[in-house]
Length: 116
Length: 112
Figure: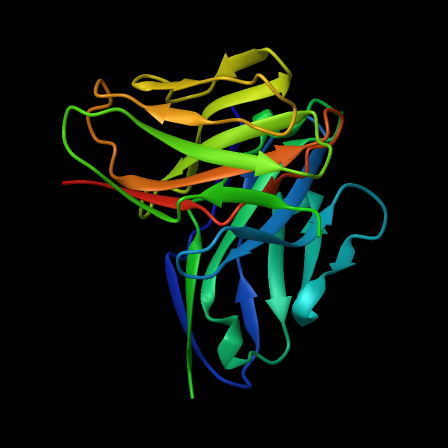
């Protein structure tokens, strides 16, 4: 069965520190992987996505993620966190073949707190 | 600017009443979706539509209804049959052949 696990419900980091948010997935076919960010009371904004090619992908706002097939992981990283990065982060997995987003599976999210 | 507009941002409903949430997109996407978000549960798919005049139930369709009379619009009605309607509702759209979803800003529904 398809699933996405974000093992960390809440992470607190100091401003300027590095960040890694974990995402593990279970998917029966070649996955299409996403990271979205949600500020309080807002919709979801796409940070980055991976389908094929280089396993290290760059996104907006200085984020990057690395796809590791052997570990079924797609962890999100940022070398230096800014106070404005405080938000909730969602990992999602879907089919690589095109059927629209109705088969997109979301993790339960990781809430990031940034302390000055 | 292209995007998805949800209205209203906040909505209050008395128990036993139906209420309709609006979602409009100008991205020229064929597919549209409604998700429900509760704390600690991620996003759950309520209904989706891949083409005008057609829609499908998602994982938690009971107590909800939708229509898709125009490509740009996909309103969601929360009926009195929905046992626990207080939640944050997100509308999204995508092309038919792409898995990437684009989201609106959400509507927070509170039953009073």
